[in-house]
Length: 243
Ligand SMILES: Cc1cc2nc3c(=O)[nH]c(=O)nc-3n(C[C@H](O)[C@H](O)[C@H](O)COP(=O)(O)O)c2cc1C
Image 1 (cartoon, rainbow, N blue to C red):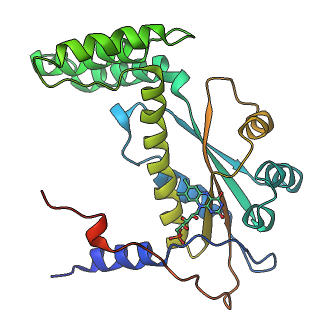
Image 2 (cartoon, rainbow, N blue to C red; image 1 turned 120 degrees about the vertical axis):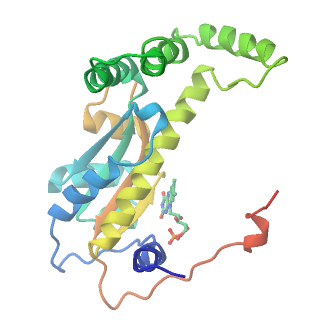
Image 3 (tube, helix red, strand yellow; image 1 turned 30 degrees about the vertical axis):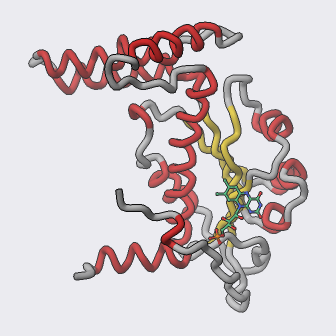
């Protein structure tokens, strides 16, 4: 049985497409971006560390610079706003502290073994995973240790510096997808882009070296007459497996 909620979700997911040309004259309500970013921040994310930042670019001069950094792509040039999804792995310490402090407050005064286990996760395990040196040597030492332990029991093996980049990019991309669905539900369209000069984008936003650009999402209204691009997907049997 299809519920009304499932039907509404299907409608939004099916309607979201990547559009490359936005209408410069159609009405556009920027508060839709604000609301969709709030929803984006509710996306599932690794350890709830929320190692991300969402940068709205709205002014004409900054949009022009960002469109140039996006290699002049049509979606970027015609967008009404762009949102840059940024990973902030470098903020792990403060975000882990935030979680531990918050949870202590929630648990107080009953901190039993289960609550202590959750606190240890943020106070001990997260620092163990995220602490690294500029050359990633510590990460390789952890990796080798995990491989050894993994000979005897199931073990998390993705503990090198580059593995942590993947961890934060995964979560950030989920936020970006949530944002794009939110924008579609608001009646506007988007185009996610990874075709950009990351150095230029970081400079434009004044980001520190530890930040990385996940994707840039162009947002705007599409002309009502714009034909829907054909949806091309490989057969489900090639991607959906029951084991
Ligand atoms: C991570 C990512 C990066 C993308 N980069 C670009 C891009 O730089 N330029 C572009 O025009 N489309 C880009 N796309 C859009 C894809 O081409 C598009 O999602 C795909 O063709 C499927 O079409 P649909 O989104 O309409 O379903 C990107 C999509 C994703 C998820």
